[in-house]
Length: 256
Image 1 (cartoon, rainbow, N blue to C red):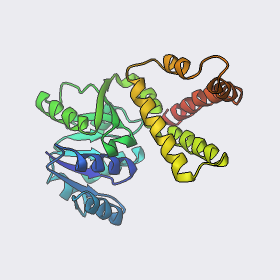
Image 2 (cartoon, rainbow, N blue to C red; image 1 turned 90 degrees about the vertical axis):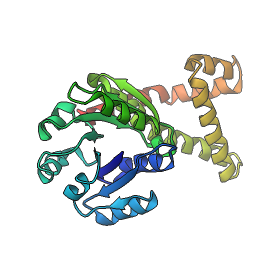
Image 3 (cartoon, rainbow, N blue to C red; image 1 turned 120 degrees about the vertical axis):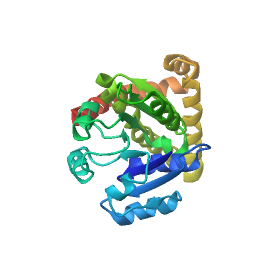
């Protein structure tokens, strides 16, 4: 399958890098962006090809990934005259019905990925395709998403909430990791060692969370009267949990 990217921003780059490293990625990847240098640079990085305009790109691929800002949907649709072989939309806050209105009759699947797709560890929440998406195309696209990590089908009414939790959260985890490493440095650790220790601890905890409840892990690590319990109490006093809830709500407000 040949994939064309309408847009070469951060999320498009994450998908392209993940597919480039995957065992069964796309047959070819083409890129077009208002910033032609950005499209060319990404194409060179993943051994793809840049294209000068969207029509040229569309006519050479099997699926167009809509990876522009949501406000640019109408402009992209106008340039393509509402035609495409099929669409994979990663437009935030843009329902499938809106995409279908811009591209009448074109099979479209909406998916919200996150940045770890770049290293094959992404989460890709997709809306159950409508009946106008052929079963074979749906199967092939979902399999392609699976090359980037874990593809999870969700109802469209909750996809914004899913995005606030899984698509935004790598930034929150990175912020926590930075703060934790900096705290270690302030207590005498060398910066590279602190960064490696934090990255390893987060990765290992992520694996544990696949089979154990968060509270079970917390209780196992923090017996009463111990050092971890003291740290958890300090986080609670600082409003850690409340801050996370506020972050999710703030993201949702932007989506809406």
